[in-house]
Length: 449
Image (cartoon, rainbow, N blue to C red):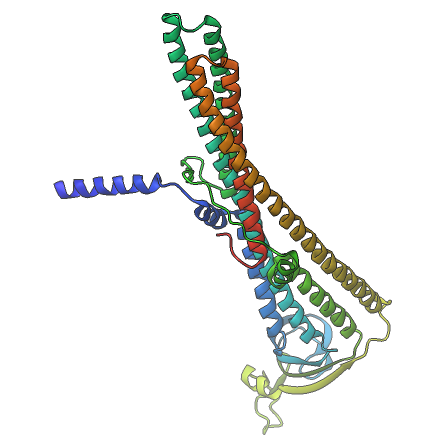
């Protein structure tokens, strides 16, 4: 019993440890991809497109159909077994088996197979595009949470320092070394920083909620992300032209546009093929049965006119018929529907070519903008690093001067607030720089998770 108790206790402790584990960026993106419904629908659409592609190949097989019908006729009608008119009620049945194979149809089926394959490949690119969009959205929200979490820590440190200075000032006022006005200034500053702390907490909670929504994370579970380290960026130099050449090889939007052009060409070929003659080969087997077909019971006795219905198995073999045919259909006039479809397909192809060029131009423009923004952020990071170090030194000196009574409380808090703002700007720039770096590396074919 004790062993069972300790085993259960160990499992509970282990489960709680796993449950409380912080999630990094990779884990958040993978969780979002596993639970995002829009991404799941894209996978289902790809499955449908794959099945349509496989079925287009099966359409090359001949068709095979079997059927049967039963009829009860009254009055004057045609006997199906003799093809003559009879004036009596009778019951009949027929059975058939036929097969047909299209030999030629302007290569429409072959082009349909190629078109369905292109549609399937486009659906795969749609999955990649959706995956990329989800990864980007999660990455941005993840870094928002990371930024507001660090901003919250910065403001919290400011509140703690202000509280500590407030306590020191109260003691100095008691011994007559500080004026009451300094205490009022510090209390006002403490109230301002507490308000900033509440704002930072609200922004952090909102960013975390948006991240949970993107990940489709359960509402009854706690989501915690790893906020201990700020991602470090590099000073890698990127050439827009080199990035563009690499991006053309794998970016889903460009690949999808390229496949769309090919698919529109196949649609045009299919429409043209519908104007061609259609040659088909077919074969069928047919038999029937009717209770109106009778025979003499004793054919060797001319005086005996007794009749009987020919048995089913005998009629099955006697009425059996086979046929084979070769059919040629030549479209002559169909209200110009065929020509209209060709014209529409040609215009759709022109639209696809325009979309292809537009996608390439958009990609080139985005790459140049991202590279330029990356360079600007690198310069801003270097400037903010120097600014943060200088303001940190200035704040340290101001703190010593305040203790010696050489500066006012307002001057001290000015230096303190400037340092806090520089630290927040520093973190914001580092996170923005990391986003741009990962964006460019994605253009180069690297995964961000």
